[in-house]
Length: 304
Image (cartoon, rainbow, N blue to C red; front, side):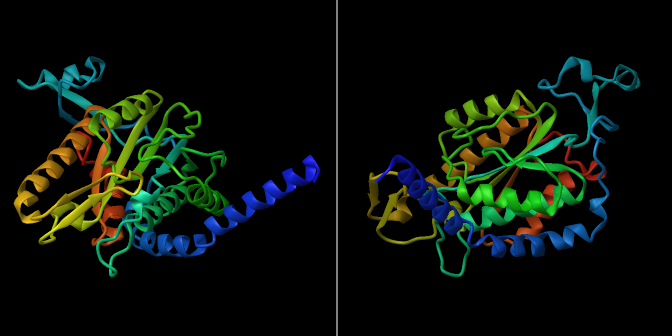
């Protein structure tokens, strides 16, 4: 067989895998459309491109703030120091990342969607909302060009479904445009030192970010009884606990500590953080996120 024939077979195989990967895309887009509909029909869609530099309110100074953001005139009126708070800035492009690997396939009950399906619908819903508000969207990993049309949403979905990721962004990061924003969706259960390293890397070129942590309710509460085996899809190692009730409180505290550390690190970069449990209505998380990106309802201080 010639080299050209081998290349053709390789291409056809790759194309077939890609077509299989995106076969469910229409269903994901339909679910995203449904989730976004209540936001799009509400009053919080009145966002325009290029609004990011407009000042809209004061808040009390935090040690993490830049001295040049202090409003000395406002601060002189009292005994507190204030900074000028600006709205969400997506003046050029919103870069969207969605974790896509075996660790997201978990669902503790048949009646619940997997973390993966939930994350994909959220990512596409954000893409729909932002594109229809006049923002450009693009995947953080992949080659799909930025755009704000229905085709851009389609390309975003294809890229997210075809591109298998690590537990954190970084596999195929593209050049992040200056003054862009990011939406990062995943379970973010990696060690905090790894998360901090990636967030520091991403924070340099991006002006804003929203981190949506998607977890199954069982991961939050550990509701099981008796003997439980803990494992990860990407690791062969297993850990067996004969009496899971004996570790439930410690487990729950560890999860709370991890989420608080994640939230705190987002706040350090003046990013926002949201938790979405897969037993919750996706529309609520979308609405909460949209409020964060709307100037008149901005959650002061970042990180939700």
